Image 1: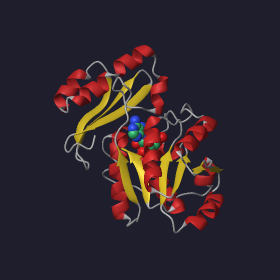
Image 2: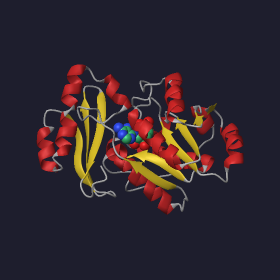
Image 3: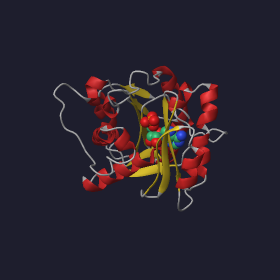
Image 4: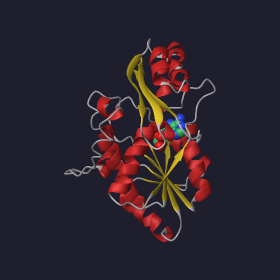
Length: 256
Ligand code: AMP
């Protein structure tokens, strides 16, 4: 596996592979089995698998957990290599947002609801970094998790609106045995908080917004809503102590 930190190096390394199928897995690191499932899907379909590790400052708000976001590059590199990543791209914030940077992608309505309403600017940061990664890597396919259903909806809209050629692949949410969706943020939960957090998957499993709100009444809820994404989901965001968790279940079809 090659670990590269600059856009120029990455372009040089990819140049001889342009006739091959390139799969891209964007991540913010702190890799877990959810990320691994994306890498495995990419590995099964692509000749060359590129993964990125970048804690994107632009998608974190002012009072955010950017500084506390878990970072362990050498652990992530070991996992990425074991899962079959060929090229791990680990740019600095300055590499992605050099001084003078001022061009942003704003998926206006989709990016302003639900998560966007609670995290203003979040999806502008997500869309912009993903467009940059798509332009740098030029993958045939990019792999995302259903766990972040609104992220997928925003990116699909961007791909349509801006006529991008990348194809999105969306993989099912990977959960722990107790039902909690894997997330880098779970590590911050105390055992007692984790127990309380389990009402999130339990509430969503009802697939009914009203019942879910009832089951979540003891948590600090940001939203519990049916969202008309493709597919339609029941999505929720809650705070357990200082940790904010999001999750969703698909309401139609049986992709999960
Ligand atoms: P993150 O590092 O949190 O930005 O996530 C990187 C990618 O992994 C995104 O496409 C997420 O949707 C996906 N992902 C995160 N958690 C899970 C999970 N539990 N199951 C499946 N995919 C996930």
